[in-house]
Image (cartoon, rainbow, N blue to C red; front, side, top):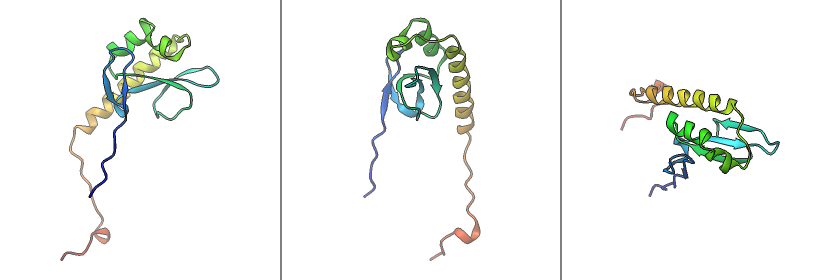
Amino acid sequence: MPKIRKIPARMCVACKQMRPKRELIRVVRTPAGEIKVDVTGKLSGRGAYVCPTPQCAEAGVREGRLQHALLAPIPEDVGADLERAIETVRTAQSRSDQPKIIRIPAGARPPRA
């Protein structure tokens, strides 16, 4: 019987929607006190999540929701970094809509029965 893995969910600080963690963009306050957009999702520190939409990113910065979640003031350049991360996510999603072709080398195929 296949093992079913639980998909971790997180809440967007702007729109308050629960979404799978992989679909959101993480903003982190590092132990050194820097605020960074964490595209890998693996930086250590306190994190907050934002939907990959310009509306949520803008609301998170403008309305102080990221500042409240991270317990630190948000620098001006974080907004620009969020916009770049949103564009990256959107281009990746548009590429993933295309069908994937997986080629298996002849030597790696199992023998036919």
